[in-house]
Length: 553
Ligand SMILES: [Zn+2]
Image (cartoon, rainbow, N blue to C red; front, side):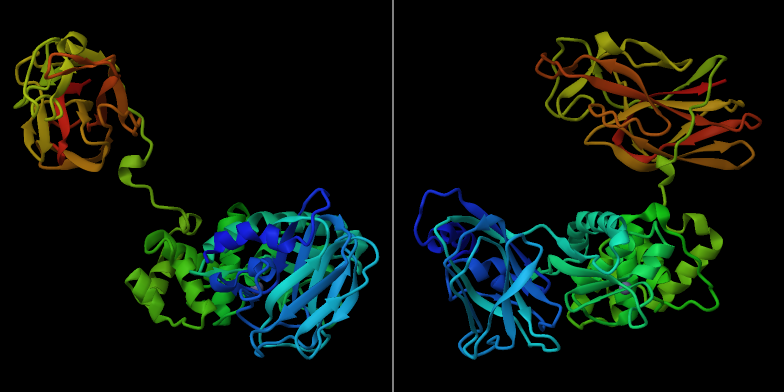
């Protein structure tokens, strides 16, 4: 039976009788990961044949919790565990809570793996399964949580991620803890998505205990369903609440190895993804290694993603989670060995630390100002080859026109010349050759010194990016330009591009008009005014259609 069918059937199966009371919803919380074939909801779907099963062991701090949307009266609770004799829980117990915060022990699991809570007084808001102190089990497998009640449990699902916080040892940190929990819970789904593994259901809960003492790790530690935060650290670092995002990453990771990568990924989650604006790091190139944990490791992973594989962390974490990690995976995903990547990373760090983790911007996307033109412009004669402009009402072939698809600019709208930004372009007449496709041709310029070069153009079949053109000077030198070109129907306002003319329609080969806006764009390039411009080499992309070229002063 498909899973969604189970979910739909669950309310009817869970209801003993209906008294007409307002239904409740149940949210499930597990500190232990499971898999798609043993989802948490299967613990409470009315079918003892389907079950929740943790991937790894259950420890003292782990729990599986049912939180109801309000307290309800119950006659009894029966929880069965195990699977035909295997993984029967015999060293655990069931707690109930009237308010979802304070729990009392209600029943122990017996030798058959069943716990029954009888003669319940007062309404129940939550049920929790836990392990006896100082004990553990290889798995928690819950076949069914059966609740005998007159209230309809209308919906059972995993709850949104949360920390069950205990600040009883440091009540003055309640505010610190509340801010931390907010950060942790809001970023948990992103963390789960970033650390995704096929069919793996990450824990959606952790017990967060604030305390201090010689046995508490200096900052925080997470494992076995419990995140321990050292209150001394919190007092000394009132703004470091983001540390719980690092710790929650460990909950989502659910263990694994090697340790350096586990810690590098957790810092990557916090510093690269959650609060990059606060990320500071210092790498000692002589002492750092590609196996450094924490911030150095996080920076290295982020750099590898920027340049080689944008999903690297997801892939590496999947390997660590299932014990499949080896250094060769860097080569598999990035195409270079971890040592080669490390060398490049360190070189990049030494060359330009502030931009180490900045995505390189393609030359054509770097902002630039258009040259200003105050003097005359000179037209450049072009070997125009095709008719891209037709008179309104003219007919032409389906493979003709500006786009080779039976559509063209209107001669009535484009006219014989066009001036923008002080530059004048001379245009071919409607019905005669008026455009050329850019195919790397070299166009002769007038051999005089000019301040700028201008191209009137548009592309078809979408915007054309990362194009290169160049101007050759009489002294043999040349200057290259990078440019993106917008489609004649979709202005993208690329750097160096200006909308020269917006036309209310285009003309079709059928003689009709297509009443949508179309554009032609001007592209301006600054020249070295002390040199004579001799030639222009066009980009090599036939989807770019050139209408005119002018030189500006
Ligand atoms: Zn850590």
